[in-house]
Image (cartoon, rainbow, N blue to C red; front, side):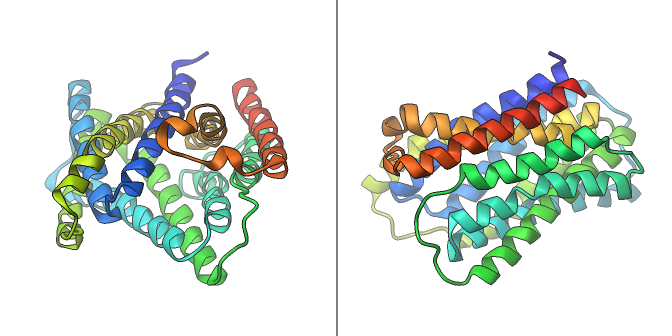
Length: 293
């Protein structure tokens, strides 16, 4: 298997571990602003070793490029957060899955690259699969319209981030563009520090500290693997399809070892399991289309 396929698949698996740990930290009292800041700071640190890859570096006049990319990353993160906060996961997550199709569209429009029919099919199947994999069988809460709008904005923002990384990073070199862009994200995140929850008891902070820091480290590592794949090899659409395998790994992890993390989703019932098995099958087909393309 080509290394450019191994990286996003590995990133997807590491993401699942990090997400389960961060969910555990949140259950133990970690607020979302603290989680967001620490994840972004860990990501910035994880991108520093990429400077060994070198690069020509951009001029001061081109510093706006990594600044915009970093802003898009943080904006997508915040839109996704608010979508999940005001609405139901079963609505927000499938809409977020449309990112794969948007990446394919933006690749054609902004980069002038022709996306093959198998890749278009893989992108569409991945988006449908994500929706099925996130069926919970629970009743959808209100404010559905706002949830869809925010989730769609997050999907479009993340997609634009991926495509602009593919467009701009070659002229800088991955060893310059990515560390600077993620450094910008860490810098922007400082604005969220005043929003941290301050009334947590010391014992509570000790309880969520370990899963929070380990989970943030996992998300930083997976960010390096995924984003550097796009920067070094291009093919943002294929990378996103392979990265969507995190939906499959999430289901398997929840059902097999979710209890290790205090997760109880494995008890959602046979109907939900059926949806998720079907979604997993569609996702596997999408991945095979990418590998064969």
